[in-house]
Amino acid sequence: MKNKYGIVGVAHVGLPTNDLQKTVEFYKSLGFEVIMQSYNEKAGEKVAFLQIKNYCIETFENGQAAMSDGAYQHVALDVEDIESMYQKICNEKYKVITDGIEELPFWENGVKFFMIKGPNEERIEFCQKL
Image (cartoon, rainbow, N blue to C red; front, side, top):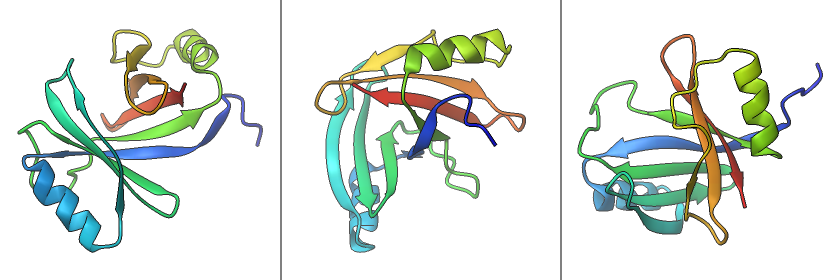
């Protein structure tokens, strides 16, 4: 099957938490490493990225964690060209739930991303590290 969107892998899975430090310590006890910590000023949330091998979790303290099964908030897919991906998604009438392509100062040069809703109301993020 042709990869018409240029998706190159899973970037991360988004996990809301009510206690960032507790979540970080839990995943560190399983062997994850903290590869970045930051503060998302737009959302007013502390954020940590934890990685083990090629699996990455973005955990963010928003005080709204479900504390039940289904606790993950989104999956993020790495893309090669965020602008091209955004145009394709809009042209095919997917439901974009962000304000277009947004940018955050995560990673060395920042990241551009946008999200859509899936058929089960799940959030799917497309992101490109800059």
